Image (cartoon, rainbow, N blue to C red; front, side):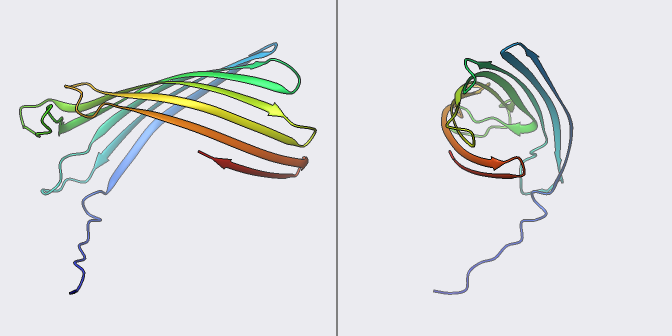
Length: 168
């Protein structure tokens, strides 16, 4: 061996973020729908060794919950968001980072399906699936699809006591 090389990188990824977000929920009988909107601006400290990560993030999500019975709820959701970098160049299809390439921009779109079921007075089981597609808006070098399955079991024997176990 030898001594491990330790390098302080705290000055390379220091940033400030600011933004606004809004959420609207409305219930019409057995249907509840919600709308989420978010905008965030991240500005990184300038360094010579690291590409500029300054970026804008726009998010829109719509959720619809349908009470199909007193013990079961179905959930459907759509989400759309975009990340746009100021100066960080996109990669071409060979993976090269050329200065002539446009700035990175990613579009995400997804669908969420879920179910919640009461299992007695104090136990609830929830499961949902999210499929999210990311598109690299230049030539597709960073395209990917993400699949997420989430399961949550909660136990609430009294209004002041709640225990939950979740996994993704």
